[in-house]
Image (cartoon, rainbow, N blue to C red):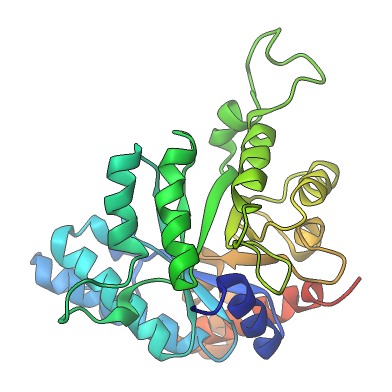
Length: 317
């Protein structure tokens, strides 16, 4: 039986001393000038994106336990881009990083089985590198348990994990998750919000026999943005065995302090993701003043600062 994902993640966090996760969301137009392609060929664009991705992984590997690679930024470059995504997953594993594949899949059961096969299952072909499979993936559970069950089964079998969207950080999602702008009676005070309903489902899905590791955490996690402290703490209390993937730090305004309620009292139970604040550090004055046009050094410094900023969260209260 493969080692439980939550246990492996907890061990990696202890080893690095921080719950920081760097998100790899590269946009071609925002790459450092030396890496931008000189022509309009797809191969050049993919090579540029992959070179940046490898550089980022090299820069952050000494400082964080895991990375989150967003497949959508590679799917925009067609089949060649998706191939680069899988190569970067394997490269990250080679640098000793755990990898969360940010794929946000969620479809009917028969289709979900195939998505799970492509993103979490051990490769069925001898010429596919097993290292290209991420350790966990993000999911949208809006079609119910049948949409996530195939992923959970693969995760349980192979020591991987899933993170189901519960409370996103994007303010535009509030109209769905918080009923923002919804007229009465749906928005009446005391009416459970959609994110609370999703949280209850995730709790049920993740509490099934065999899904909770020795860390006391399930392989079924939740994407939970740190909103106000009271509601975030209420979600943590309602999901005692659920690991949180917390978006919104840095460029979206989240801080280490705002993320504190996402953690269990012993300092476990959550990882904090930062993407643009690290990836685009070479555009920030404070890093350019120290490292000039050396984009690699800027990214490494930003990763180090981010890891240090959230490190206290992983310590017992």
